[in-house]
Structures are given as structure tokens and as C-alpha cells.
Image (cartoon, rainbow, N blue to C red):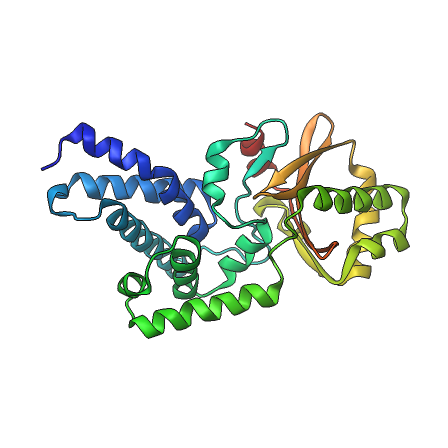
Length: 289
């Protein structure tokens, strides 16, 4: 059996990657951490000397734990009715966080995480493990409980959904920020036409106000509707701080000395195709802390 200290060090070297896998599956940072900790418990009860590829073994274990968590949620009907955004990963422009960057992997934007959560769990897992973390389909199939060709099909269906949803933002962050600044300026000025010029015609706005204000959670579709909402709520912003949300442009909005909301923008071809707004006070307090 491997030395306990050496085993712990090897596990720690994989922790951030395992959290990234679990976060992509669960959309919750705390649940992702719990899944990784459960993997450590299972490893500590296993003869590590019999594990040929520890990183691969841990990835499989975490993936199966995540599937169990999702199935338990469904069995208990825990999924909330209405808008429930994934936990955002917020990075302030002047405080780059290497761990956050590692956790984000190659994916950009909160909207991608939103669409991942809408996929069937096997599709989500196949896409995350193969497309994001380079796991061979033979191993993906063993996790999902399917044949290798079926695992390929699961990932392919997920890929199509993500492509059709247009959730991959423009790569140029400075250009993203220009579009966001133009949007904010038009909203503050009540410039409806200016807003329409930076909004994609099929733009979608998702607002998560939390369980205590579930009536304020909503999904709004279409540039004109989104522009109207932007003008209606622009007067509530006393301060706006540029941040990165899951690696893409976003803003923290302050009111009365507290964070009032967090908005993640998805910019594609120079226009806003999605706005994801978190206005759940409890979750925002955790972010601020």
C-alpha cells in the first residue's frame, strides 16, 4: 500500500482538476467540493497499490459520485421550478486567481454552464469527460454504463446542443468589454435604439432572484424585451464593477454599499446573445465573502 503522505500529495495534485470535472457536472462549487472529498474518502479505503492510473481512477470515481448526486436530486425533486443559475466563478480584473483559471478549464462563459445543466446527465458527462478533459470514449462508456459508440453519440448530441445555443463567446476580452460598456451606457441613458444595436435579435436574459424572491426570477427572450428590462432596472445601479464571470465579461452591480446583482454577458460576433443575472442575496454574500 502506498505511503499515506505520498497518497495525499498525489490526490492534492489532482484536486483542482477533479473540482473542475465536478463543477461542470453539478453547477455548484460546494457540491463539487463535496464530491471531491467523497472521492478522497473512497481512495483512503482502497488499496492504492492496485490502482495503475490514479488520476484516471479518481476522475471516474468523481464522475460516478456526480451522477449519483444528480439522480438523488431528481428522486427528491430538488430541482427548483423556474430560473436557477449555476454558481458563477467570479474573478476581479485586478486579482487574477490561478486556481479559478484552472477550475474553468477550456470553457468560457456562464451560459455554457447553464446549457450543460439542461443536458441529460449522460450527455453532460460524456461531453465534459471527453471534450473538456480528454477522457477516451472507452472509459467514458464505462462511467455512463453504455457502449463506446453510444458514448460517442451522447457527446455528439451534447456538442450539437451547445453549438445551436451559441454559448461560446468571442475570445477577445477587450472586445467583449467594449460591447458590455456600450450596453451599460445605453441602458443608463435610456437609449432603446442604442441597446438594440448591441443586442442579438434572439438575445435571452435569465434572472435568478433566489428562492425567497422566486417571483422575480424570469427568462426574457428577444432584443426588444431585454432592452426594455435593461432600461427599467438601470436606475437601481449605484456602482458597477467590471469582473470576469467564468472567464467572460461581467459586472457586479452595487446598491446601498452592498452587491445587488452579478451579470454575466455572452458576446458572440460583437453582440450580446445572453445575459445571466444572479440577484440571490444569500449566494451573492458568499461570493463577496
